[in-house]
Length: 456
Ligand SMILES: Cc1cc2nc3c(=O)[nH]c(=O)nc-3n(C[C@H](O)[C@H](O)[C@H](O)COP(=O)(O)OP(=O)(O)OC[C@H]3O[C@@H](n4cnc5c(N)ncnc54)[C@H](O)[C@@H]3O)c2cc1C
Image 1 (tube, rainbow, N blue to C red):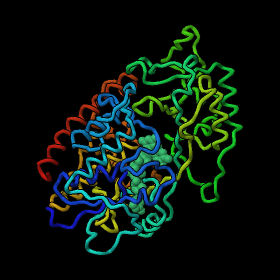
Image 2: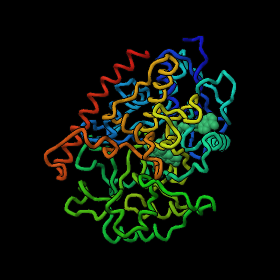
Image 3: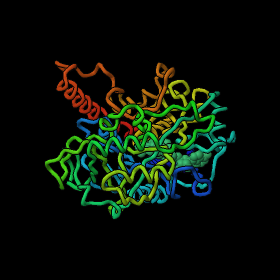
Image 4: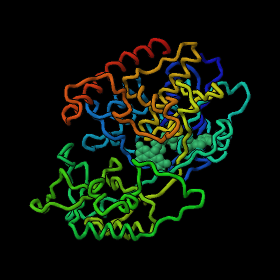
């Protein structure tokens, strides 16, 4: 199908890269338009496609009990490029799928460059041109969509606003961590024993730390930012601290499942964990420590953590704009804009949250475009699957009123497919998740086969 107009994808991030791969699998030409490195975002550091802007983790890889693990596996069944490159760049991280971020991004880009159906143009797209060369377009410009394109999207969707906030966590150099105080261990000893570094705090140190967080200098909000809500899963640490003295001890600083190897008989009151950020093991990110404190305050406050007194930071945390549309109101089930069905949306801009979820909607948009070009009925993923549940979250009109970005979770799966004898008890709930995961995977295998036979 090389003589047909190529599909245009705006944005070569997680979603755009995956969508291009799926379209190329169907032997349809595709152009990725990526504005970096000519035009930078506030967060991306490299020129690579599919750069991971914050954590290096794709979260749990447990496809028997965890919803994001199920999503990983379903994407693998559907030949996901993002999952293939993540698996090939894997770092030790207990039950999580963490990657060497540079190796991952380079590998995605190499695959795309060497595919004969894919071309990459480095340019900012300010609006979707009316010309016929731009037949079908996927907008996958992400949470940091350029201002010009945001304005175009506002105009074309007739919406009033698109922004909210996300925050990123700091990264510390390994050789600046005091390993006579900190120790290696994964919670409940999952993984290979060297996946996380733990810094212990006693009660006094913990309260002193909370106090410092509460009194720290924060980045000023600009006027238009003041009414922008936080996404609960990416809440800045100082906002959590301000909700109560013990809040962090029950969140990212929980001390459970850990024994201090230097002082095994003394239980820490709270623990700060760091996770490996590159294959060399030279960089470690502070888990769950997204922040909007000023850089100066971050250095002062984080150096109060035992083990980090001399910490050197490779990157400090920050606070950034996010951009998403009210998809349940604006999009059809095949991710096309109700007002212009030549425009598809994918990625974080559709109101999913997270690397995996963004890539998953890219995968779906790629398959849906291919169905359209090949005159096939849209092959929707099964409702029982993680892909189907995510798609339902962003395209079910009933969700439009209070629509907020969402990670995949078992709460999004249909509630009535699996029955267990004791659904209200913990064992019953866990059993239900297991069975839900099993059914999702069985149904997805059939779906992926159908996609392959109809469009590849
Ligand atoms: C600060 C921050 C921290 C985050 N931290 C995490 C995290 O730790 N874990 C997690 O799972 N998720 C995180 N996310 C959320 C999100 O899942 C990721 O941002 C993810 O990369 C989204 O994938 P995407 O493909 O939709 O967008 P992106 O990966 O951002 O890709 C979009 C691409 O479009 C390009 N672009 C934008 N406008 C234009 C234009 N007009 N023309 C051409 N190109 C354009 C951009 O340069 C970019 O390369 C974070 C988001 C932000 C903003």
